[in-house]
Length: 417
Image (cartoon, rainbow, N blue to C red; front, side, top):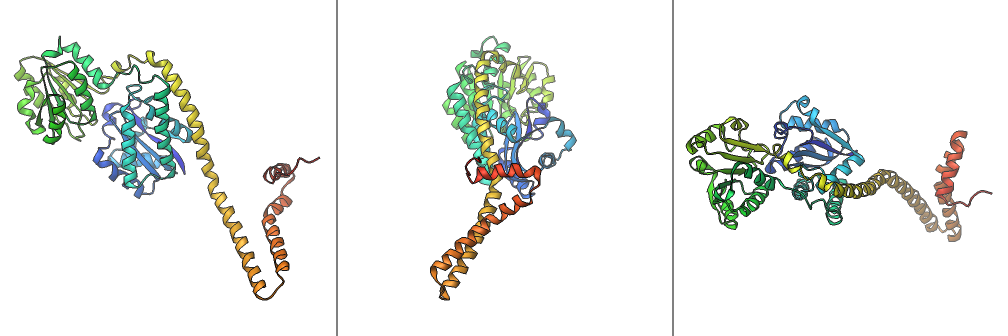
């Protein structure tokens, strides 16, 4: 069994592919149990966000895990494979640490990924698919992320997707103070978007959510109103800016609905940011006049603008990750000797137990105690030394020198004169 990180992200796969292999929050536990039930992996956790789908696993055959990913989503493996990366052993450790620290994100240094990773691990723990190796890996990932943020400026100049959305909206509208904003969803990404757009003081803010009470809860924090998703068709034409991020597996806004809204607005532009994966807005909507639709990939150029400013922090963070990866791999490699150590102890215990029982029988038959102890001690010594002595006697000339040096180290013999 080896440790692997298998997946695809914004660097290896276009949005159209990423949304095909994404996992909804409610589907993760079931997927993990399916993977685990097929005995493809001894341990597994799945991280699925708008920018990546990754499987961290303790497995024998990484190709079987990749095949499972494609099969689970009813896709041909040839469709998915060109976009996948396979990180074994130390590379998997380094990758996990970079992901947790925000170094592998589209928004370099963004903090949301750590919370998403922790949620993925909690889900895997609840599904019963996290064991000793992955638990150790993720706990170490959290501490590395904390060390990176504490000792570097990796997050100091980051620009989030929400901040990039505001920046882009200012290119469409002369002033945001005259705009009407619609937020679809009530999750962490929408909450962050609400915070950034509220600072620009739009004329009104509306939250649309499947559950009205959850939408009202978020709306109350920003002086906004709330509606349900079913009310969108009748209200859509009112909004200048739409930011959407839900967990829906199907589009919330179709091209037809937006076409009717655009017609009712009489050529006033509609600016839409779709932060969801799978997408909340049908991609064909970007063909409409006066509809400016941007996906998470479209925002990538904006959020990379500050990369050069953070390069020094990146180098410092990478140095921390390399050092911590080396430490973790040493622990991981030490796990490979555990079966041998266990077998040695079991064999030694079997010898000890057998000689003890023999001594007890002799004593119960009236044998002299000193003689019994002498016999038992000699028998234990002979049996414990039998295997290494036999191996040395049977060794070839080429192996004997190496074995002699090894025995000298194991038994701490003095240097030969």
